[in-house]
Amino acid sequence: GDNANGLSIPANKLVIGKYIRPGTDGSAGWISGTNLRDYFIQAMTNTGNSYPDWNTGFMIWQFPGDAASSFSWSNTVIEAWESYTSQPTAATPSPITSSPTAPTIATTLGQANGNIKLVNNPGG
Image (cartoon, rainbow, N blue to C red):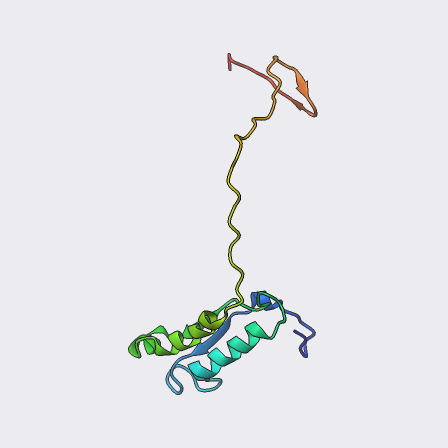
């Protein structure tokens, strides 16, 4: 989006990073897993598209803080993706009904084929 520096970063390139334990892993900018989950749900559902413009994920600092709480912070944030129900489903591929056709290649020694000259040099 727009900012004071006139820089624009596409939404599909943004990854949010937050620390887990306030006062231990960082001192400013802490947010609860519940609030971050709610912001992510809002970001993914307010685009008006069938698939969110933003859906790149998050990272945490530091892993031991989340592990010490059985990953409750991360699991709470992950609920944003689990609650997003408008994700497209993969299309079922059509079955193959015929065999592929091999390209025709000139086999005569030195014969030109378009802009490529095929050369057979069995003697090396």
